[in-house]
Image (cartoon, rainbow, N blue to C red; front, side, top):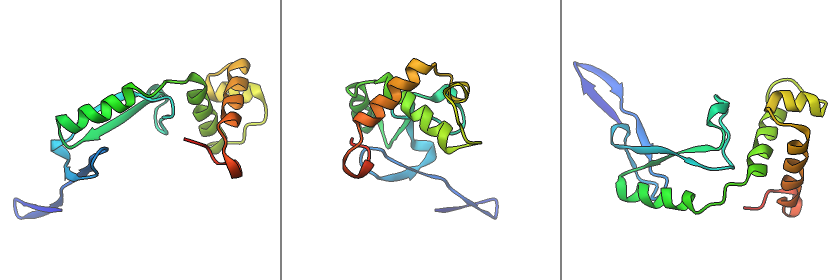
Length: 129
C-alpha cells in the first residue's frame, strides 16, 4: 500500500499473520520470539533456537504461541540446523574440527545431530515433519 505524507509517496510496510494469513500494517503487529529447535538465524547465531512469530492481534498471537509451547524442543534438531547452515554458507567444511569451529558444537553433538537428521529423512531424502 502507498500512503501520502507531506506531498511525498512512501511505502507502508505490511505484515502477515502466522495464523490466519491476513495482511495488516506493520505498526499493528504483535510479535515475540518463541523457542523452536528447527529455527536458526542467517544473521545472528544468538537467535538460534528462537522463532519470531507475528500475529494480527492478541487472540491469534496466543494461539500461535501455544502451538510452539507444545512443540518439543530437540537439541539434535537445532544442532542439525546449525550444521546445515555451516555447510550451505561460506567456505566448504571438510573436517569435524572445521565444522565444530563454524557451529560451536563438539564432535559428539555433531554425530548426534547427523544421526537425528538421518532418522528424520523421509522417502526420497526429504525431511519429515
